[in-house]
Length: 228
Image 1 (cartoon, rainbow, N blue to C red):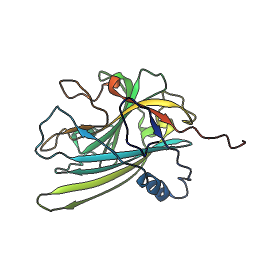
Image 2 (cartoon, rainbow, N blue to C red; image 1 turned 90 degrees about the vertical axis):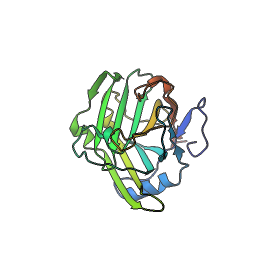
Image 3 (tube, rainbow, N blue to C red; image 1 turned 135 degrees about the vertical axis):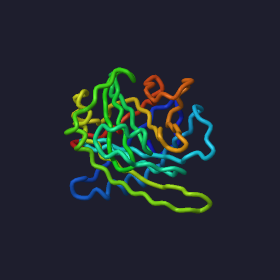
């Protein structure tokens, strides 16, 4: 299950959230908070003086994928406010995911305000931006604060509820028992000290998150037939 420590050669199981988002989004947040946080690791692409801390949790519902990111970093930027702006230049978290046997994948990138860039394709140079009206359906709750122990440190969280309709090239009616491949990232290309964090390590010489061969296998929890 997702609340266990993971190994790269094992399939990660994404749990099912049984609540009703329409009635109380806070229940989703509480459920996500009960899961074991998966840490993102710093890449070999940069030599950081202070390494940001980033982790995430993920679950799914009958009609959406949900994530919560927890971030602590020495520098913070949240300037972009329009859909499909280059939010990777801000303090940014990202989900790259490919469903089933699809060789193409989605990249969904969010700054701390919840501003989203989303696209689909086979690689970095083959991207089709997703329609803004679909991206507008993504729910988000963000929170951040600043405290100063020895130096400025910015802590923020972002909770996302991504409707299956957003994945418009995949014809998803349910994720029950299905499989996917994914990687999760944290970056900030235009921060004072840019950084690149990732869930599954990428072994390229230059920074490049568009590496689906390094995605991790995930499976969505198989639900029991209620009739049995």
